[in-house]
Structure formats: C-alpha cells, structure tokens
Image 1 (cartoon, each protein chain N blue to C red):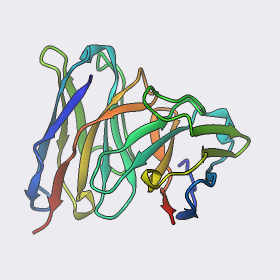
Image 2 (image 1 turned 180 degrees about the vertical axis):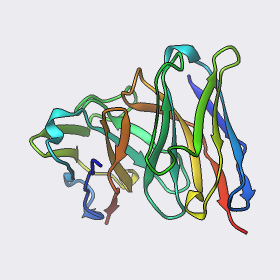
Image 3 (image 1 turned 180 degrees about the horizontal axis):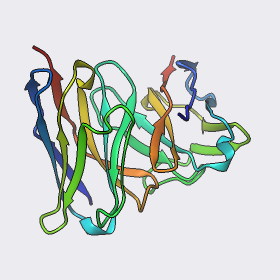
Length: 119
Length: 106
C-alpha cells in the first residue's frame, strides 16, 4: 500500500524560504502524478501544485505562482515543494498527495507538515 | 477562476440518508471527486469520477453529477460518518476544492 511521509515544515519569517519533502513508498512512484494540497488552521483544503509522472507538466494555484516550485526525484521516490517569498497567508498544514493517474483523484495523502510564517 | 460551492453544514440522524451538494458552472462536464476528513486526520478519497467508489469505501457512499450540481449521498448514515466532506474538480490543470461541508450525525 502507498505510504507518503511529509517533512520540512517549521517556523519561518515572512520573505524567507522553505523546502518541503515527501518520501513515497509502496507504489511505483514514477507511474503517477503528485500534488501538494494545503489547509490553513481551521480552514478548508486548497490545491497548491501538481506535477506529472515525468515532470513534463507542472501547475500552480494562482496564490503561489511565481513563488513556489514543485519538483520530483523519481530515482529516489521524493516529491518537493520549494517555497520562496513566504507570506503569513501561506501558514498551513501542507499535504503531499498521490494521484490515481494524471490529474484524476488523490487516493493517498501524507500526514502533513506544518508551515508557520511569522515574524 | 472556477469555484465550487458547498453548504457549510448538514445534520442528520443515524440511519437517515444524507445528501451533500457541490455546485459549479457546468460542473456536469467535469469529473468530481469527494474527500472525507475527520478531525486531526488526512483526507480520504470516498468517491472518484463522479460516482466510483475506491476499494474499502462502504457501499452506502454514492455520487452523482449533472448540470451544475454534484451530490454525495450517504445512505443509512452512521456516527462514524461524522466528518468534513470536500468536493473537488479540475479546471484544466488547476485543482479546485469546495469550501467543505461539516456533516453532523445527531
């Protein structure tokens, strides 16, 4: 069964950077698109970014476009999210999620890693 | 940008049928996905491509999508179904979630 472990979150000052990682196991990682979804405290889910199996297709929410970069390492089964120019409204629990194919449904989710942007 | 609208809350007695709606412009032309999230837990996919159930999801969960509205139906609601439910669709390559519906089983 697929297993995803998110890491890299923490407390960071506005304007600084942070890199999130997601370690994947239990499935053929390079067969599936992967995504990042976030949830601000007490709020709903917000899709952040997605990447196809071969990194040929990437997409971002308007709220993070130009600041965040998604990438993946298929050799080592890792998904990443480089977050630059962080703002207070980026504060959230960030989940990595496995796609069932290519921009279909998200069938496995990590436990989430908390990013807090505050001075 | 594309938007999905859900009622903030739905209340139901055990054994009744709960329906949670998700509205969006021409939503019936897109596939809709439904996620269940219990407090302190990661979301779980309960319906994909409008009406398909992943393995392990009880048969009491079903879905439909037509026109501007998709519906998640939980037949014979149980206390364990109390959770937040989110609909989701793709607008091109952009993911869109509804605001979520809190299902309370009284």
